[in-house]
Image (cartoon, rainbow, N blue to C red):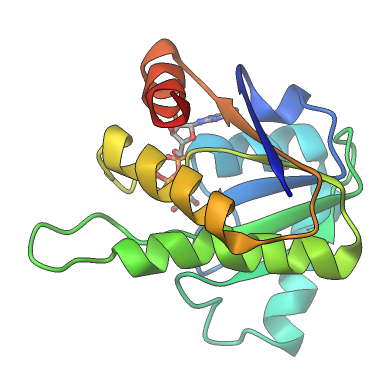
Length: 169
Ligand code: AR6
């Protein structure tokens, strides 16, 4: 059984076995939490991302998938990079967002990670409505049946924290 905990703050300050990054398919960094993780984690993370691109993901990491690298200078052993879907009014991409959480947990289990910190994937630059993003995150982690002991959602602001807290009530 995975215990779900919530905290408001900056995920790059979190201590965990694995910290999940809301990346993009290039794996080469970006803004938002991705930028923050690479800034604080240092160049080792990007170096490993570049190697992974060259060896496995020439066309980029597909949306909904996840892959691990070193966590560099972060207080964690691994960063698990997952690619969230952009929100669309035309198309229901919920399954791809759920897949980010499932795949990240699958990778975490493979690594033997016990504590995993997640941001609210896709709810920033990718425009996913916060309440729905929180619902998908919490439901998917509950149903995943992962061996991970603790999933900690690290929410950047009050609004995100409240959206996740509402899902746990
Ligand atoms: N700690 C925790 N949460 C954070 C932090 C932080 N340091 N910084 C932002 N957030 P976003 P996305 C929250 O935009 O929507 C990048 O350019 C933020 O408030 O980081 O999946 C990538 O390279 C929001 O709730 O990721 C992709 O191109 C959540 O993290 C694209 O953005 C996710 O916001 C991915 O967009």
